[in-house]
Image (cartoon, rainbow, N blue to C red; front, side, top):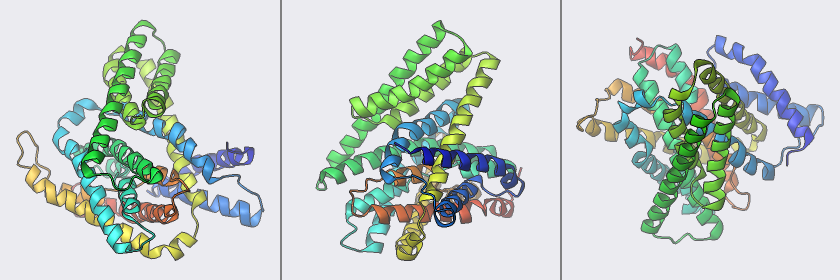
Length: 408
């Protein structure tokens, strides 16, 4: 459990971040970058200036991320998703969500493995790195797209891809972690694929069942507080039931439950109920996402960038190469599929550069078991990639949109 010092420390950082957020918006500075800086400066000040131990320990972080933060991040995104708007682009989103995220993870893993080329960094480590780097985080880019008046379709594609990719990446990462910890590194590709599909689809089924039960409860018992409590219970019950008891994907269960509740129960809500529920989950998501970036800042060690700089550069190169390959290698062909609204080259460029890594990559990196000998290298690569995409890709998104004349 976190100590009282750690709890007070994060409360102070959250308050400071909320007070400084308007300043970040005024200068169009990504809030996620500000959170990382606040976490890093705050922890350094506590330790080096005031000599105060923050109380944060690695063995506390894993369970908090898995059982507290992840369900909030996934459920909020799924319950807020506009299914009707998304349905028009279901083909490109489906491509980006399952087959291409696996291809991206594989390309990144190959690049990292042969780039590092060290006996202490086996294929399992490379595959774990590819999995946690495979899911882009649209949150840092979506606000910039809206402020730039970029086409609405770009936001929908990135938002849909981010939601489903997050879930896919977590499932893949969880399976690889289990294999790494158990020493089952000689599994065939066929058995690994079957395990992935069973965990993936089983989690979807569990979440859908929880979502339908929640829908029935909400038809009988109506009210603002009831609705909020039912959604909270649904999110955490689906995760714990699937993950702990059925050994399926808790993240896919949360995703499925959120989609079912969001699509079925919007019609049951009065305007005041809908507003309250939306605000509740928006605040919960805000706190969860802020905690992830603050944790990243607190746990950043400068030796990561001095000792692991080459591995970080290799990771950045592999991620960029994978993104270019899956976008420009697939969409020119996918544009000719029946029912597919073509994605123009200019929008493909934005999709490529908008593949920013953020919340989910950091969450998975922070949840790495310390028993793995290569955990520090993987975490260093993850931090380096996230900081590069936030400081370079996110901050140059607006100039790129203007250069491509995509402002509406």
